[in-house]
Length: 262
Image (tube, rainbow, N blue to C red; front, top):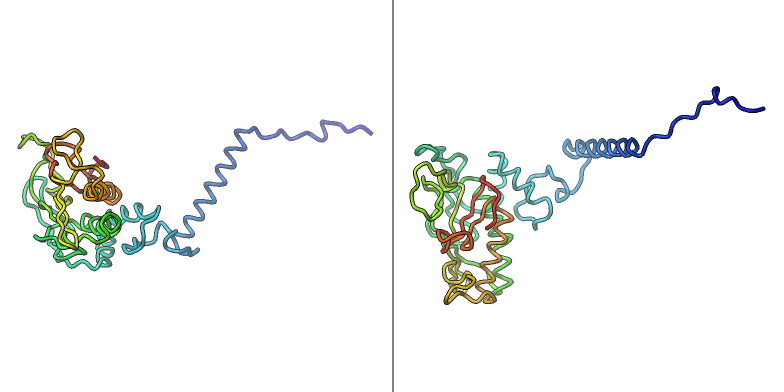
């Protein structure tokens, strides 16, 4: 007996686009549920794979380190908790305003770190935390690779200063405030190795085409290149001698501003 098609209608096959949308929705829902489970602790995973776990300042950097560092820098209490892990010695500074666009919050005076610093810089907590991560996970490994010894001291040109951005044109009325004006920047001019060898940005940075320029293959030049490149991983902004003449003798390291690596 023949079947009557009207009694047994054939359901239309979903289009390819509809199947793709349904599949994508299912995947997103699964990821959302998984993320919620991890964030609430319903499902436990190793901290190194958990983006919501606190930053472990001693752990070797991995693909989540940047996310965890950014999160710690955004939240004052989380930042101070991470800073307390570093072993650096510092004094908490009271919040202050020193002028239009100048002053700092959640800042510390860094008395000692893994390296000698000379004058104790005043740094915002995010800046101090990024400094530790750079010194520990970028600068020191590079020094051991290039010279077989650690950096013992860092020469800096200052941190907090109520001033405008320095583009080499002098004081310009109406110019924007520098990140130095909020203790979110540090200028690094040189390094001293454990054996006493001194390496300065002014003398050892390789400058293309400049008379008497440093040999780009010299270990000192390579160390500075490594230090600059590593800083770009742990700070929001890094400017060096290749940026402009105003930075010919130092690296400008900052947090909280635009993302830049020059």
